[in-house]
Image (tube, rainbow, N blue to C red; front, side, top):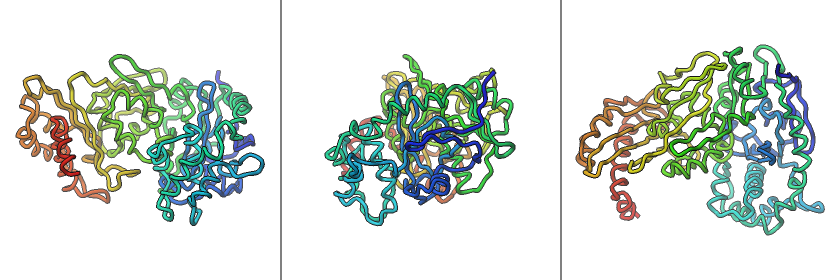
Amino acid sequence: MTEVSGAIRFILNDEEISLSDVKPDTTLLDWLRLERRLRGSKEGCAEGDCGACTVLVGRLMGDEIIYDSVTACIRFVGSLHGTHVVTVEHLRGENGHLHPVQQAMVDEHGSQCGFCTPGFVMSLYGLWMRDPDPSQGAIEKALQGNLCRCTGYAPIIRAGKAISSYGSPQGDPLWAERIALKGKIKAITDGTRVELGEGADRIIVPASLDDFAAVYEANPTATIVAGATDVGLWVTKFMRTIGPVIFIGHLQELRRIAENASEVRFYAGVSYSEALPVIAATFPDMAELWSRIAGEQIRNMGTIGGNIANGSPIGDTPPPFIALGAKLHLRRGEHRREIKLEDYFLAYGKQDRQPGEFVESVTIPLLPAGEKFACYKISKRREEDISALCGAFRVFVSDAGMVGMARIAFGGMAATPKRARAVEAALVGKAWTMETVEAAIAAFAEDYQPISDMRASADYRLLAAQNLLRRFFLETTGQGQRLKREVA
């Protein structure tokens, strides 16, 4: 029988915290500022976009503590069990001096009004610990989720390049603290389930994947929270009650990636950041899309399973996964079943998931040799923006130039992520030519009746989808690169 504890326990900077009275919707930012008076972390957007509240959260992976930058405004305190939370107040240099990140920001004039500065400092700190000599591209990627209205970013990027001239990660006090911290975190994550509160105030932190399956089967109306990148906004923007809550972001069994010669299997708790190396290696045509999913902090928090499970029509992962023929693995208690990912989405807000059943993993077949594949994201901003539409295209063209197979899927074009079956049928069996593509364009109106909203009009969405098929054809026939050079 699983042992049960009545407290959320974690390390805050250099202090061990034990909380037995915390609400499911208490955010880390509110707790830091209101309860602990640690006010370096600021509230800017309260939706994980601006990065002013960035902190580091470390978790034990194997025998190492891995630190991720996260947005504290949508991270719930209940999800912190067994972690090390580092705020800007904990940064310090040797002999009473500023930390190298702070000194670099001062010397390179990386701060003006100062409101966003602590978030930038923490994002740069997280990058510096992973990569003491980052490229400008790596710095820009690490700062995608940090917004500044004053500096124009150039001084901050110069500061990111200069940090190691003031010291090395090995000389950082946190580096030395890790040995002692590993023992403390191991003692906290001792295989017990955490339960506290009652009714809508109830929090459950399962001890294992099997424990989660049993708990959710017994409590099918509970809200599952992994990365909180969606549920966090339910609280901060819509003022919804989310309890009781089952927090699962700590479950290592759900953070696995299994690969073989024919497919890749991502378990539901794998974050976008954790998945990126595998995506880049096995599905390189998806890598650009991946780097445009939100900012670094959200990619560190958000999970593949969550992006699928919530059934959003504008989720970025379902269209390419559907085009690749992904299979979804669902679990309820000890019972497991497998369905095609495209069959999971039934209608807006409705998925093929029974009470007490959850997404355990998704399996994606590798792209067979000779097939062509690409995915495209259309958004108002290139970086850190929600898709107006997202399209994925996959075709097989024979040596004779005939289309033998076509799979096209879109998000943002219907109430669910959906295949363009009429367009596919108009392509298959035809020569892979622009004439065939132009003839198939009209079939988009049979597949999709998009809506107009704040992100795009219906006409724009339909025209963009048609143009993406044209683009895919040009790129797969080599004309796209020529077109790019002519435009340049």
